[in-house]
Amino acid sequence: MIGMEIRRADMIADELEELVFAGEFGDGDRLDEVKLAAHFGVSRTPLREAFQRLVASGLAEQIPRRGVFVRQPGPVELMEMFETMAEIEGVCGRLAAMRMSDTAIEVLAAANTRCQQAIENSDIDAYYRENEVFHHFIYQQSGNSFLEQEALRLHRRLKPFRRHQLKFRGRMAQSMSEHVAIVAALKQGDPDRAAEALRGHVAIQGEKFHMLMSSLKTAAQ
Amino acid sequence: MIGMEIRRADMIADELEELVFAGEFGDGDRLDEVKLAAHFGVSRTPLREAFQRLVASGLAEQIPRRGVFVRQPGPVELMEMFETMAEIEGVCGRLAAMRMSDTAIEVLAAANTRCQQAIENSDIDAYYRENEVFHHFIYQQSGNSFLEQEALRLHRRLKPFRRHQLKFRGRMAQSMSEHVAIVAALKQGDPDRAAEALRGHVAIQGEKFHMLMSSLKTAAQ
DNA sequence: ACGGATATTCTTGTATACAAGAATCTTGAC
DNA sequence: GTCAAGATTCTTGTATACAAGAATATCCGT
Image (cartoon, rainbow over all chains, first blue to last red; front, top):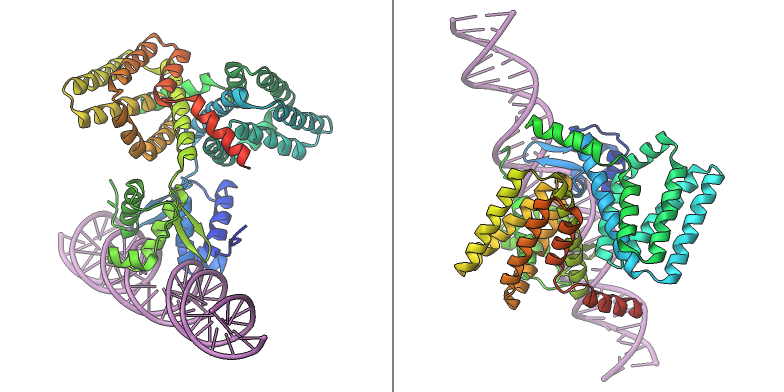
């Protein structure tokens, strides 16, 4: 690797992203340049460069001459993001079904087995880790690294919420059976079934909740 | 609208984006801070903030202590982007098929008619304009504004290449018949057919070329 | 003349200084 | 006591100054 991130601006951007993800800032909170500069022990300059990164990735909004304000997704946007993630995973699955090699399928099955073992050991952290490996591997096997990057970006963005949500419902077992169906569809090279399985796996609550929200939103306009 | 973009950094970022899109910079070209500062008549500070935006949107790459270098997509990445666009449009179509109202279908059909008229008048610019309206409207009718934004982002990114490519092949007529099929599928509320039609419409060359490239790439590793 | 160590210059990254718009506070009229 | 106009303070946006790593040129030994 070249130039291993000596820039303080980048480190600060990473840290700010983490803080926003972790919910340390509420929606609409202003990111105070001087306070944060003091907090990080730097001048305003690198902070302002870091802000641009947050703004560009949609984590904050910049209003000229006013400042930058964090933007936490509300329930509607969150659901839209989950639906988009589900659709993108479905796409990855569709493409992967057409492109995965037999050995790649083996690798995926192995990741799934480790996932299963984590559940049997009640090792939640391991489950999350292996589940992530499973999904990232499917993105990669779409054979489209641009799509892969987009999927990773959204996956990362949703990470905090996914964790929160899965913990609530004890649906790890169901999740595993869905994984099995996904692997089977990929093994058979059935694009539509793989897409459907992945979409359903990620969508979770699915259409009803969305349509409810969506109708509320349009009614409110 | 609030604070109508007084920031020079933002104007510069926009202008730099345009320049990169227009191909004024080649792949790997370094964005010289002092030269560009002189060119825009500002100091390095706003330029550096603008750079962050380019880097965040993937138009440039920053190497610490070296500078920022523009990244033009090569043929492989370009094809990956087109494939991703095709898949995302397919997703938009799938969702729109389930969610569009009858009046929305009318609006879409009207846009399509204007598209057709533009062709009959051999008005290329009007065709591009109306074609864009047509596609943007489908994104919107996905009922998922997060997805809509993502689609718009990618559509915008591909704009220069699409224009270039469509001009070459005189396939406007074929494109129109595809539009008709898309509208028909949406009218019938058939998600799979709508998705398929849109995917095919955008994909253009499709799988063979991709697989060729993809195999070349993996072989080269 | 060639190669490598050193010196010089150039460029980036950060800090500070300054300008101007926004927000807040003060004051005065009613 | 309330409201508005003006004054004051605060914050952002930009310019400049300075520090340090990278690139380039110079010089020396062989």
